[in-house]
Image 1 (cartoon, rainbow, N blue to C red):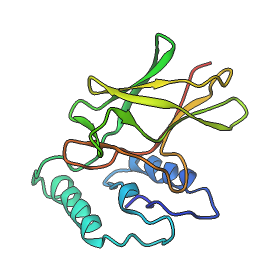
Image 2: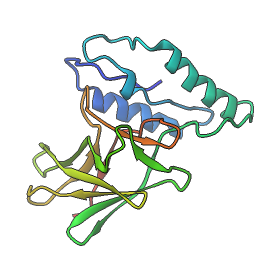
Image 3: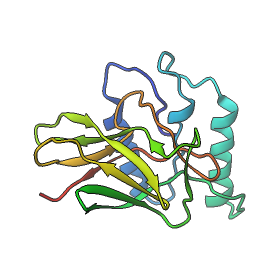
Length: 170
């Protein structure tokens, strides 16, 4: 289980990033729980949903029993397109927002000095178009890259998107 939202003194974004990198190891899996965390309590209160997500993952990955999507959207490509960034996700991910709108919360652009700047993002044809705020030469595009981010990107099964920091070519 990836660390849930929590206003920790440490920057949990980097710990979550390390958890994601550990998925490169064989026989590993992870569910995202950003949407059910409590910024004021390190332990998510909705244990049933955490267990359901873990069970879906285990049934699919360990036992080969398919019960629909078991992971939230995972980015596959970030590219510059007409002055904005376009984020593509794995083909099986039908993107949505948990509130039903087109605006996607949680995207930021990392400037060359490492500071994060809030970016405006919209869901367009199963991709995310991100308007880059003026930050000079951006170093990375980030999604949900804070201790307790406000996010709303999910797939058609309601599973939340995986946080990421995507380096941009200079």
